[in-house]
Image (tube, helix red, strand yellow):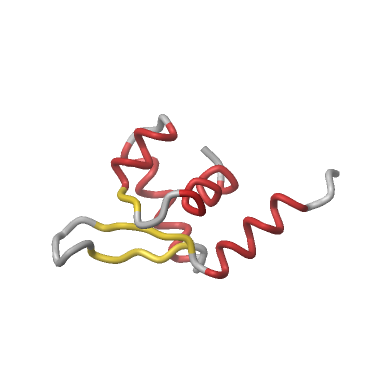
Length: 77
């Protein structure tokens, strides 16, 4: 799972939890959790508590959408 794959997933599936991402992308839950934490610290994703529970949900940010657009349209090297 790389940044492009994760950003692309977040752009298609809003307000998603770690368990859903790990199952959909076929990675361990801890791997998905750390990748999402990195994206949120970079400002590429937003995380929030869902319905006043302890579960964290994630959604792509405007900055994340811009980065995804750049990665999808970057010229090949």
